[in-house]
Image (cartoon, rainbow, N blue to C red; front, side, top):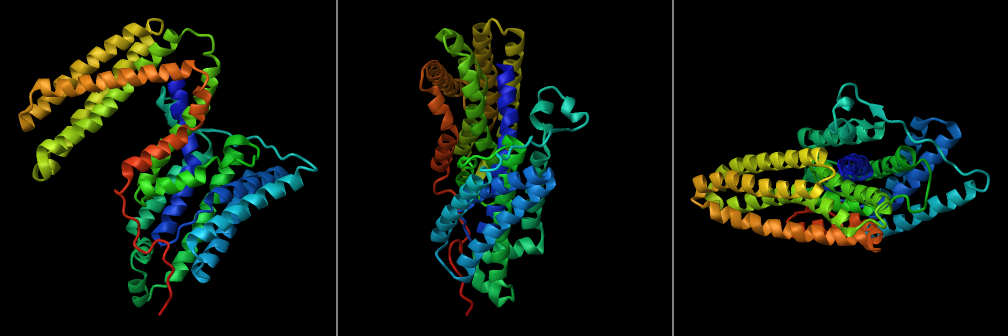
Length: 439
């Protein structure tokens, strides 16, 4: 169980990379007032170009650079259409989607008449000392250059957007282009550059897919990541920093799909109890602390009201995080010490989680709001029952024949949950999708 969890987390960090690349570019694009719906196809075209140039030259840098240039070219076409010609951005994006996707597949069918381009993926870079840390080293510090580059660029472009004059101009153009024009800022130039940058980042994401992940090309290589990146941009509220978290969430969705399908293949013929117990144990140890963290914050907000909310938030945050860490460590200990007696570990983890969580949380709520221990225990018991039900449902799904199909759509289920949770809670740049005519 520990091995599969480590694999899922490590692959989640890896598979978040293309989404993060595209999200960074699209954050800039939408901040400037332009939305590009052709990102999915730009990834596909970038993947093909990067693979073909690398296959011909044997140079990963040239292949990646070619993918970026191709993506920037697609972005230039989109910006010319939307900013210069003032075509509806949604229509232009869908046209780019058809054009780039069709071009990539056509070129691939042409070149494969002579040779099928396949390359070895970019090798992993092991960070000295850090990669030797148990579990954490494998998850974070044993990846290829694309992975480190993605998270580095997210931080750099986040700082540029919020800490520089250029970033201020981009945000201003997306909010009030008329005022920017009056201040002497070239609105359309900024929009052109941001749109081209968005295409270049999508091309870089395509290079990762073909050179850093698969080593080959497929017509469906983007796998919905362009569309999901647009969701991540909204989910992150147009911030490159929050886009890291959003990309990791969806990366974990893809990781679950990739790893559990292979894991499921070894479960056929296994008694259902052997599947249910580890699943319940894992869900109980992870989901209960996470849910209690979120509900603990919600309870604090409800009890405190608007006036005391800011003062009590930090205390509740620390307490719930502490409980999460304690419960997670306990679950790891039992999964390592008692691998053959998972049901014992599961029961012990559940009991300790409820006791510890109740005592720790009640101290905060009783001190801050006068709420009793019984009040907190009621909430945790409800979560405990809910978690058990989820564990049984997942166990039956794993033991049935429909699980591979459900696992495949995991990223899209995550996207649906994000859309439902954040509906009406985000505010887009005021001038998004609105063309600007200089008066």
